Length: 216
Length: 216
DNA sequence: AGTTTATTGTGAATATTTTCACAAAAATTT
DNA sequence: AAATTTTTGTGAAAATATTCACAATAAACT
Image (cartoon, rainbow over all chains, first blue to last red; front, side, top):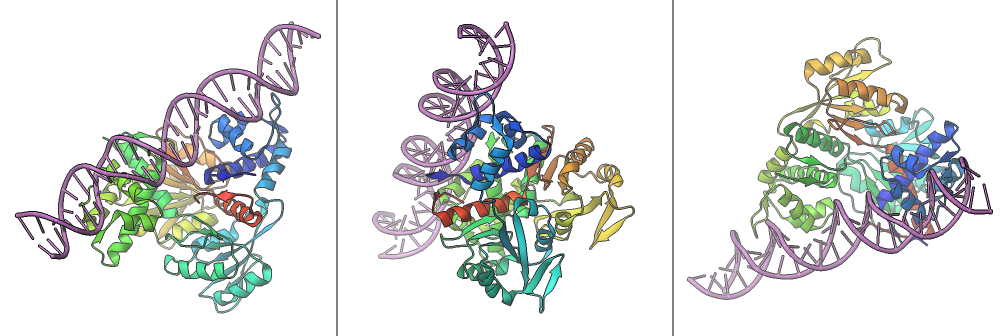
């Protein structure tokens, strides 16, 4: 039984898994904590600590078996079966996500999009896009638990409330606003504006040589 | 002179600024650390500590003047003038960023996009999109210092090397791979797959009730 | 003008995360 | 089969980050 998990350690775990996928496709069968550390940009002790949290064992002097490790991580990350995801708000970001090919190989499938400006069903590639009023029914019928919110910030909270009421348990939110959720629902925010602003800050800092930069 | 700045404190600063923009547009003139803390989802002491790092002063018992604070933050974050940004790789994500309206009000302007599949100049809205071989010249001519990389991961490092050689100092990277840069260049990574996987992990965790979740 | 009240600013205390460092163990060499 | 090498696994130490808690102080009230 695990007691405390930091978000960062989970992100790292997922990173390791993605690195392992690449190593595996290159035909590697064995990997050391040191290799993973380099690829992930962390310390090797960090890698081993992360693994030890989940009782993942390697072989002293032999490192880790790539495929075995990959499978263990996939299991921990709940990716041994396909996860269905819906995207709410088919603006620029929403469209990009629906198009994005990278999810397939992570066992994530975007099964539908929803948008309030739509009056009738459309399609992006193979993904059906529905008017927003179809969403409640869709979630229930298809037992959806994960949603992406990419609506304007003014309607984000309202959308979230509906989602939660219908049983959504996890949300990736692109609306640049802090949303409130019950404890039963996990939310993670991505704010592209903030990301870019942060980069700009550091560039200005370097330019002015005001400061010692730490750990980007 | 500031000696150590964590990335997180910068992200928070940018968050505060965005919150202040909203408060200001609602007509508020005064704000307490407690209000900002609520909106940003942190402790009020955290807000005050962040400010004190940059010698931002409020009034005891009076809180902070919204517009003054906003201006101070904008100055710290280097947003008192327009920052020009280019987007390299006009796939799904790249297109979304070029379309994205949110940057304008942060004084960020996307001035061009570049893509290797293009043979001649195109346009997305007002933003010109050029074949990739025009990029070096463009950077030099327009003194660009910030770039977004949204090319496939296989060409990301190659693109980055070119950018750095031509003087790019800050990069927001969407390619799901760790890129190596000289110290003179700041890089920040956004990996949408990882973000979604992390949410899925926590949802599975909640479902199985394996664990106490901390600080999402 | 004095008293009360609310909020900042910040050292000190706590909590968390990362790194070090080394014994334990497995593979390889001699 | 003993000695050497290499890498894991993990307590302990160090570094960071967050929160507490309270004196200082300014506004509001009496």
